[in-house]
Image: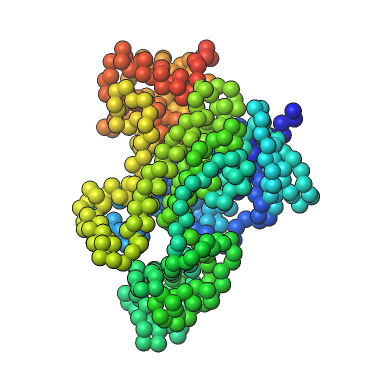
Length: 519
């Protein structure tokens, strides 16, 4: 059988493009098929937040992102379950965000993936998928007609209505909620008075900022720059499903505002208009043979602000594992760990987004009491921090083997400042190439020697840091810590645990001589 490429990715949104870049960093031949003939121009999202902010920095993209978006920084407040969660009381808010319209993010990721050698084919729609024990073949329609393409693996990143997921026989159980949300990033004309508190005044009516509940639905508004630009969302119940892909006119948003608020609000110059219904769905499995799902094809969450974060983290988790399987050194269970870990992460995200559904729905006394109770809990800083970390995904800890119960095992490695023979660096600097790293932070030649038989797959790094959290950290390419030595841990306990972690994640040892690198 002729194999045309290593991996086919269906869908060139943030998840698919991030995965293409991750695979190319590992040297994997990658073709991305996208049915849309050109890059998105209408923003589906206005930025991204959470753990992915740190992971993109770990890939060396901070300067490129800063050149086209706002600086990444702590988020002062977010909407949560129809309320505002204010993080300003916290000295170090756990939720970081960057304002960057999705078309700009996708353009950056597209450029990066192509620079690394990925092939992105736009205007190519997948219509059929077949797989056997050795390969996956897709049938696609492109500008020059129908053709077939064969690869070792296929990853569906083609959205919540994924055709590939359906063709692969992967169930997508869950719920579609009855509310229809209409969202618009628009401007208000001079006939509308803008007040100092951000509210609007028109024909004697005051249109408030924040969330307003009426008998007919929910209205939400927040100010944006430039002046007189606002983000407006309405939520109303419906009796059926809506088509998110059907374009929405400005008049539809205005009519919805009138139904909810009873106000005729003049709006002009729409930048973004969209309509959607929230779903709570998660694929029953993220892998079916040689077909895998990621991003919205794997999960649909009933709240905004989490989808891009979760999808791109799927890609970072999956990329190195697919590469290991293709390059022949992956342990038997490595690729299956993608489902285990990211389905686990998806369940946690589903938990807090479905909690938001419970908070925002209903106006009976019990629903009002629930919102009041939750708001009161968030006056306590530990609870406020925990909610922020849950939304960000920074509290995520994969349930990895952890014989010495080190608190860092399973978490994303912190960006520790490092001192090396060549000068100052950070942990993030070591992860630009998406390779595993054994970072030794103490004078532990014994630990370095244990890892030498894996030096063809793992970078061995030596550095010091103030207040070191561990004698050594075994860091996977997705920045999660696979093993950590406790301070001054005896070799007779550290050695077997380190060997087990190396074998579990990076396969059998080899006799390749080690090259020790000091950054």
